[in-house]
Length: 144
Image (cartoon, rainbow, N blue to C red; front, side):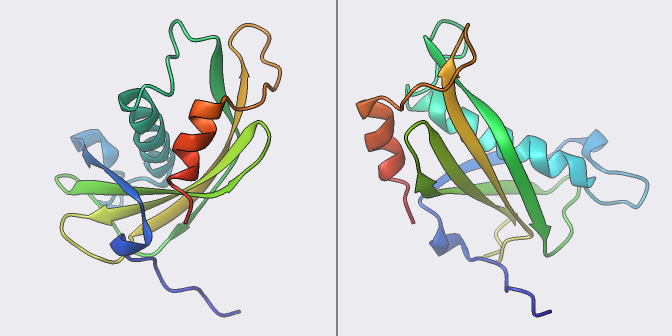
């Protein structure tokens, strides 16, 4: 089975910088694989909050993750500074598939690439709700 090469920084539309922490390292001396998923969540949700798309405390809707995955290409560890590249692969009626590349320090090749699907749901009902026009326009700008 052939393996896809890592994405490049130029393949992404938006970027967020995340500082690693001492406890991100595991017994093998590199970032534990579970931390990658936390970084994906932090990057996308942080970007949505910064852009005024997500208000998880008082908004009428929130986003729930219903699918996720990751491919690893290289190691990261504290005290690396991670740049998370964000792009959108597809937009549905109430869902968005995000793709995230994690770049170590100033490197151009992704050390890890992940995806997750967000579903827009009512903050109390937890039932799918179509994306608002504003949200759809925003995520459309992140389409690859």
